[in-house]
Image (cartoon, one colour):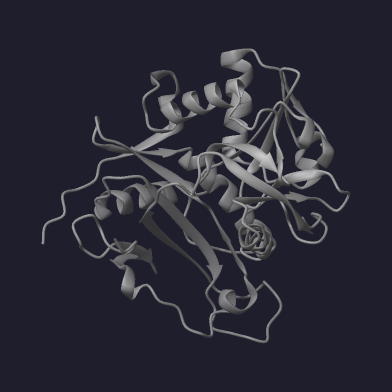
Length: 319
């Protein structure tokens, strides 16, 4: 099925230039500043379908838009929508598109000025657009074979690492492409000092001697909401000590467990790195129990954490 069609074959809608329009009509000019210079920030938000309730559960919607708005301030993207507006627009679009399956929600704030040969941010028009598409297993596998990428994460002094800017994802794309062309599922990226940073689009955790360890944000890892959630659940629900510190590459080879987390990836175990099995090469017990609890939460099956989800009820689409 095409990703721009609903389950019943109708064309999906996008939010574009202040209106809900067929996705085929949401087009920008070849002169658009963001197309030439990657002057944009975005978010990746999951909507998880709960068949029993007939609802889409959107995980940490407000938090994602709060981060996007921080990125807008940094890139001087003056979009005409408040946090509340963005949340309402998103729920409305999800409901109008009538999704009855897991979806990916992609908001994008960008320099919409039709102007090239201009390397400044000020005095350029900005806009906001939003799409929703059906979405399955992002990484293509439930257990990952990874490699250490030859590409290094930039320092925050080179390009901001704590927002999701379009420009910074060239680094992720090069690392992911290198890994998949070599036959691996995903790349593990190091920072300029040689410390473990993250995957191409996910945060990283390892388990060692019963402790859950993850790279410092100061090591240029993205402050991910799934990362934050897993740390919270580990301590609150399972009394697992969580440590944020720099991690050497060799430590991953010797870890008891390794897994990646992200909005798109959920929690996915890494069972092999650079052709070396992690422990026994199988999903570990801590990864498994955190994965089960996290998934129940994001699909709205855990009443204790329903406040982390925003619900949307798909509307019946008729021809």
